[in-house]
Amino acid sequence: MDAAGGETFGVQTPTDNSPLTRAASGDARDIDRAAQAAWDAFPAWRALGGKARRKLLYRVADLIETRAEEIAVLESLDTGQPIRFMKSAAVRAAENFRFFADRAEGAQDGLSLPTQGFLNYTVRQPVGPVGIITPWNTPFMLSTWKIAPALAAGCTVVHKPAEWSPVTATVLAEIMHEAGLPAGVVNLVHGYGETAGKALTEHPHIKAIAFIGESRTGSLIQKQGADTLKRVHLELGGKNPVVVFADADLDRALDAVIFMLYSLNGQRCTSSSRLLVERGIHDAFVEGLRERVANIRVGDPLDPATEVGPLIHPRQFEKVCSYFDIAREDGAVVAVGGERIGDVGNYVRPTLITGARTDMRVAQEEIFGPVLTVLPFDDEAQALHIANDVPYGLAAYLWTNDLTRAHTFAAGLDAGMIWVNSENVRHLPTPFGGMKASGIGRDGGDYSFDFYMETKNVAINLDGHRAARLGLPGKED
Ligand code: NAD
Image 1 (spheres, rainbow, N blue to C red):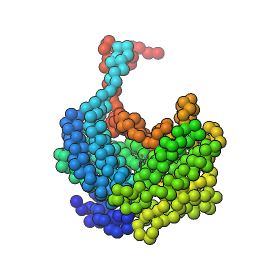
Image 2 (image 1 turned 30 degrees about the vertical axis):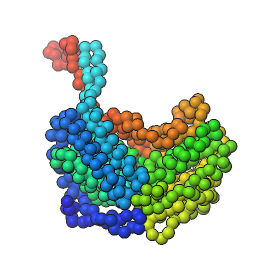
Image 3 (image 1 turned 90 degrees about the horizontal axis):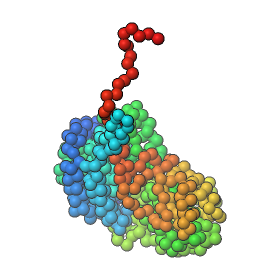
Image 4 (image 1 turned 90 degrees about the vertical axis):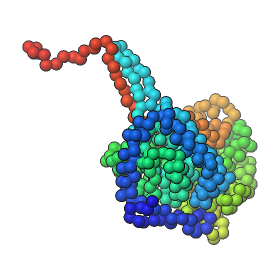
C-alpha cells in the first residue's frame, strides 16, 4: 500500500549499491492509521484465546518454512549477509513462532498467593497494541523474535522495520496475511526512524514499544515515549568480551572466537568483538588467529562458499573503515586486514587489531563489522576489570577449564548473558538481554510475556474481614 504522502525511499543491494527496490515511506499519518487498526483489532484478538492464536501462529511458522529459500535469498541481497547463515534465519524464525505459539494458552497463568482470610491470585492480560521497531542486521529473524510473543500474548502489533533492510518484513506481512491473521492484528509501516519510528513511539494507542537497535536510539525512544508513559523494552548495542585463559581448550576457543566475530559480517549484537587473552598464550593464540582471519573468504553473499559478505550500506562501510585509522592513531596494530576490497560494493577485509589497550576507541566503541580487537591480560583480576570496562553489558564468553574460576568470573561479569566454553548457543526459554547501555528488559520464554502482558492481582476475602469503621455517630476523640 502507498504511504499517505505518496513518498518512497530507495533500497540498495550492498554488493554494488545498485537499486534493489523502493519502499513506501510512511509518516505520522500512516502510523496513525496502523495504530488505529491495531487498536480496533485488539479486543477480538485478545478474546480469541490462546488455543486459536496457537493454531494461527503455527500456520505462520509453516508458511515461513515453505518460503525459507526465498527469504534467505532476499535477506542476503538486502543486507549482504552470506547465504550460508541466512538459510538458518528462516528456520529459526519459524521456531520462534512455534515456541511462543505453544505457550500462548498458558501465557495468562499466574500465581496463587493466599494469606490469612484472603485468597490472592494473579492473572496476566495482554498490554494492548504494541509497537515493534527492528534494526537492519538479520532483520527477518529479529522481527519474529518480537512479533511472535506479542501475538501469542494477545497483543496486536504495528511493526516499523529498518529503512536499510525493509524487504523481508514485507514477506513476513504477506505470510501472516496468508496464514489468516485477522485484519489489523499485525500492521507494517515502512519508513525512516525519525518520522515513522518517532510517531510510533509517541502514539497514544500504542501501549508499549519493543525496540532493537543502537543504544543512543534507545535513549531517544525513552524520551519520545515519556509523554504517553510508554512501557519500553530495549535491546541495544554491545562490545562483548571473550576471555581466554591459558588452561582452556584452545582449539575450540579459537574456532569460537573466529565464529562469534566474523560470522554475520560482524554485524551481530552478541559478537565477541573484544578478545582478552592471558599473556602466556597471547602470541601463540594471536598467531593462530592471524592465519585463519587472513583466510576468511570474502565475496558475493549469494555464493555458498562466502564467509563474509559486503557491509549493509555505504555509511556503515565508511564507519567500519574509519576505525582502521583510529586504531593506528591510538597506537594499536592492524595485524590483518584494515582495508576495503575493490571499488564496487561495501567489501572490507576481515580485520584483526592487536596491541590494544582498554582505553582505546577500538576497545570501547561498537564497530559492528568484521573487526576484532585483542587485549592481553596478566591475571584474573585484570581480565575482569577489562571485561567490565565498557559502557555495554550484553554478552560475555569465557574459556577456562577451571571450574571454580568459571563460576567466580561469571559472577563478577556485568553482562546479561554469559557462555562458558561455548559460542552463543540459544535456548529459547532462557532470558536474552543486556545490562548497562545494552538495554532494559529481557526476552525469551516467559520473560517475553512479562513485557507484553500486565499482571493483575485479585484479592478475595474469605473470613468476613471488616474494614476499620469511620464516621460512626457519637464518637469523638
Ligand atoms: P538504529 O538504532 O539506527 O535503528 C534501529 C531502528 O530504529 C530502525 O528501524 C530505525 O529506523 C529506528 N529508529 C531510528 N531513530 C528512531 C527514533 N528516533 N524513533 C524511533 N525509531 C527510530 O540501529 P541499527 O543501526 O538499525 O542496528 C544496529 C544496532 O542494533 C547495533 O547497535 C546492534 O548492537 C543493535 N542490536 C541489538 C540487538 C540486541 O538484541 N541487543 C540485536 C540486534 C541489533
